[in-house]
Structure formats: structure tokens, C-alpha cells
Amino acid sequence: MRLKSTFNAVAAASLGLLMQPSFALAQALETVGAPVPYGTEHQPAATNIARDLQWLDHMILVIISVIVAFVTVLLLYIVVRYNRKRNPTPATFTHNSPLEVAWTIIPILILVFIGSFSLPALYEQQEIPVADITIKATGNQWYWSYEYPDVKVGDDTLKFDAFRIDGATQIDDEAAGWGKDQPMSTAEVLSDVAVKKLAYYGYKKEDFLLATDNAVVIPVGKTVVMQVTGADVIHAWAMPAFGVMQSAVPGRLGQLWFKADREGVYFGQCTTLCGKDHAYMPITVKVVSQAAYDAWIAQATSTGNLRLASN
Image (cartoon, rainbow, N blue to C red):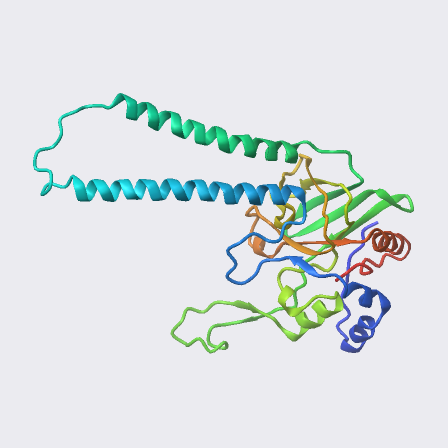
């Protein structure tokens, strides 16, 4: 049984649905993991894996910054101290054994030091624990399909597709006021239709191009094992706030796992170039309480309504 979301274009119906209790429940969910304009830092970590990876990234940044600074100082010193004017007679030595041993051993020690932290982090990602919840994600051009194999809906399992919330209009450069001398092109803009769709599913305007109509819903503090595959070309399921990414290869079932420890809405993205709409293939995960998750499962299996735990 395939559950697909549809949007009622009538604004009155949308506003009526916004007043339902399920929407009020949804407003309690905070957007935690999302890109920000001009952002240079990681998204807030919501799993131990993400925290370990972010710490490792910062630690390596310090190491390479020190190395770059050291090499830069050496280069400047050599340029100033040993230029032709100050040193008209070049040195004639051919090697320096102690120095050569040092610049071989020191990088090895640095790599061993980095490996002592990176290998445990890699092991933690690759060792898949026993799952509290198993979800299968299938990449399609250009949307995701999800299945909860342990959740029964009649003779089938809970399945649904997650499409980007669109409703954007296409405009050309002249219509946008960018001048007639510019090459004609199209640009996606946030239309009134898109705003209404976002509101219908409980999102803000800022979530445009990030939000999907249906979302992966999981309970906080539970181990989730995600099985990832592709239906057509290679995609990739990535959630930065969880510190996970898995290629979705057709004919191959990959796995990743995470245990989110903070309720909220998290946005991810397909991270493997998969065709013309690769940029419009977002991922939405909503981490809720166990009670809200149980209520969402009950409603999804009985009525097919997947919006109970929406933001």
C-alpha cells in the first residue's frame, strides 16, 4: 500500500486543517538541523556519532592550521635570510640526516595521533547495533520512498513517498528586473502556492526547498537502522546533524544507524549527483517523543494520515 500526500489548492480547506489539534501538536517541534545563510559551522549535533565527527574535524583543523603556519614561517624566513643579496655564496651541503629523519618521523606520529581518534569514530559508524526501529529508504529521481518493515498495514507494511514541497513559479531575468542585457534563464521563487503548502504541512517560509510533504518520524533516544538503496541511479541519504551518509546504489542494500537524543525537525539532502533535479531532493526527519511516535504510527496505519507528527 503506497501512501502519497496530496495538496488541496483551496486556501480555506488548508486553513481549516491548520486549526486541527494535530497541527497544534506539531508546532512544538523545533527546527534543529538545517542549513543557515552564510553558515560556516556544522549543524547542531543530535547524535554521539555527529559529536565525535565534529570534534575530530575541529581537532584536525587545529593540527593542519599549525602545520600551515609553521611551513609559511619557514618559507618566509628562507626568502628573507637566504636570498641572493644576503647570501651571495650558496651552501654546498647535499643532505642533513637528522633533519630528514625528523621530517619523516614527525608526520608519521601526527598521522598515528589522528588515526587513534578517527578509527574509533569510523568503527562506531560501521558497527551496526541491534535496531529498535528499522526503516528502508529508496532513492528515486528525484524523491525518497520509505518503508517501515516492522509496521504492518493490513497485509503490507507502512510505506510512503516524500516529495519536496514545491509550488514555485518560473520567471525570466527581464521579468525579475535583472535587465534585458542578461542571458535569459529561469529562477525558482517562493510563490503564494508554495507558502500555503508549507503552512499546510506545518513549515515556515524559511524551510522552502528543504521540507518534504511526508517525513521520516522516529522516537527520541531509540536506535534507528536505516537500510538505503536506489531504484534508478546512485543517490545518497545524508543527515548532517546525525553525522551519517550512505550511498543509495541500485541492487545494493547499504546500512547506517543513529540514535537521536534531541527532539526536533532535521533536514538533509541527497549528496550524490543524480540528474537534473539533484538539488531538489531533500530529506526530512522528525524526532518526537515515544508517545507522539506511537500516536503517529497508530494514525498512519489506520487512516493513512502521515501529518500527525509534522512540524
